[in-house]
Length: 181
Image (cartoon, rainbow, N blue to C red; front, side, top):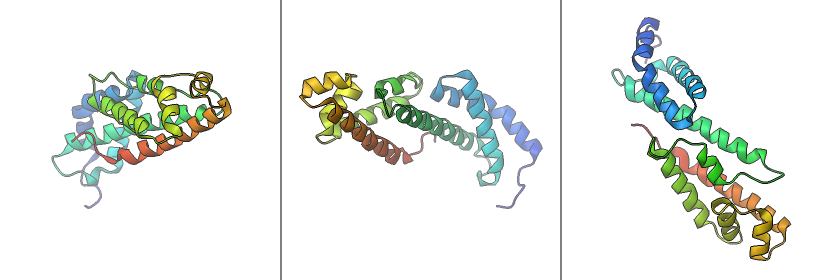
């Protein structure tokens, strides 16, 4: 497509037409007004930069997809930051991370994602399976897990760390599918 197929005036009209839709999509994912506004701005910025990639007349699904991707990337990086921030002490339970997502009735994606993470945890092989179930799903402490499984706390800590890496990889691998059509 040639550059400049859409004028700034046309793009401004597009913004006023779809501003609310884009904001609503971002808001459903992240659950915070200010953050949703930032992500909506990023969506339109990205849309302007890639305006020639949009099939004519498909502005609504195209903008919706960009908004969903911006919000998903934000949640993924927030999840990643929370998981990495806890390398030394207690790590956040998956349940905590999922609770920062919007309520499932708002958007079934969060629910699917939660179910997928849960299935991934349940599919882990030993020695990570029991440790991961107790830590992420039942939210037991390292000491409680160590005494329940009769493993040294240091071993449990290492196994949780490793299980977390396996989960992170599985989550990132499974995130290739589009959300908003």
